Length: 136
Image (cartoon, rainbow, N blue to C red; front, side, top):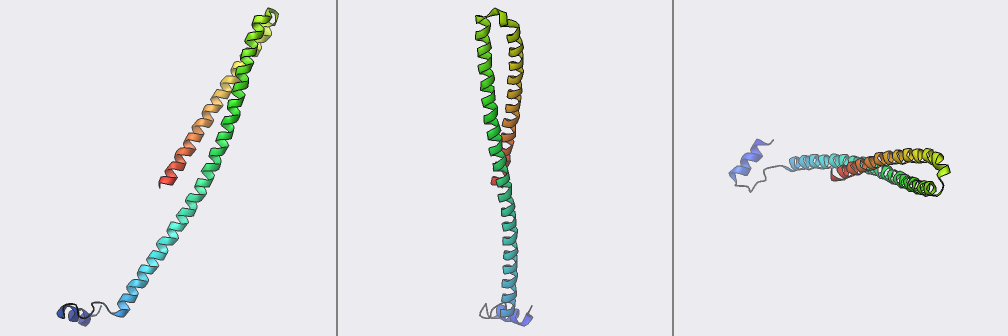
C-alpha cells in the first residue's frame, strides 16, 4: 500500500506503524464480514440439522410404537398356539379344525416376526442416521 510508510516502519525499527488507519479499518471490516458470513452459514446448517433430528426422532418413536404393537400381536399368537395344543389334548374330534387354526396361527406368527424384523431394522437405521447427524 504505502511504500513510504512501510519504508519508514522498517527504517525506524517499528516506531512508525506498518499499516495506516485506513488499512487497519479495511482489514477489520473484511474480517467482520467473513465472520458474519461464517456465522450465517453455521446457523443455517444448524437449523437444517435440527429439522433432520426432529424428523428422525419422530420416525424412531413411530417405529417403536409399531414394534410394541407387533410384539403384542405375537404374544396373542403364542397364546392361541398354547390354547390349540390344550384343546387338541382334550377333544380329538376338534383335531381337524385345530390343524387349520394352528396353520393360520403359524402364518400370523411368521408374518408378525417378519414385520417386527423390518421395523427393528428401520429403527436401527434411523438411530444410526441420528447418530451420524449428531456427530457431524
